[in-house]
Length: 136
Image (cartoon, rainbow, N blue to C red):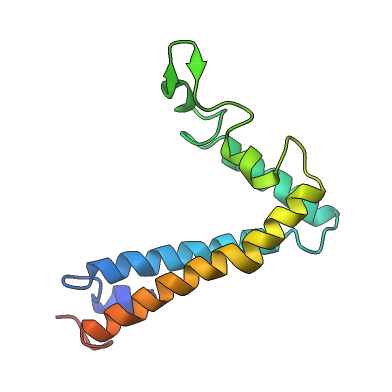
């Protein structure tokens, strides 16, 4: 990413490929997060607790975020404690065995499969745009 940024290879006609590269980097960081609890020790459990609580405070997908109240129709909240991103990540209200299984499946199957698709698109676009030469 640094080489692409320093050489200006993110400029047209390669801006789509830059976006794909940023998504790949973000998914790599997410792989790091989902791999952290796999040893299932105290450090892993508390890391998942802290990380999922940070997700709970996200402005729109967490029920404690400031934007969650904006996603309401009358008295009906669309984002509540049972439908926010923390609940989806840990598989319940508390960190437990379901959390370990979820993180294992996300880490070993889901994210690598999605990354494989994005990498194929990324390499295809590199080849289509003329390789990794200097900026156009």
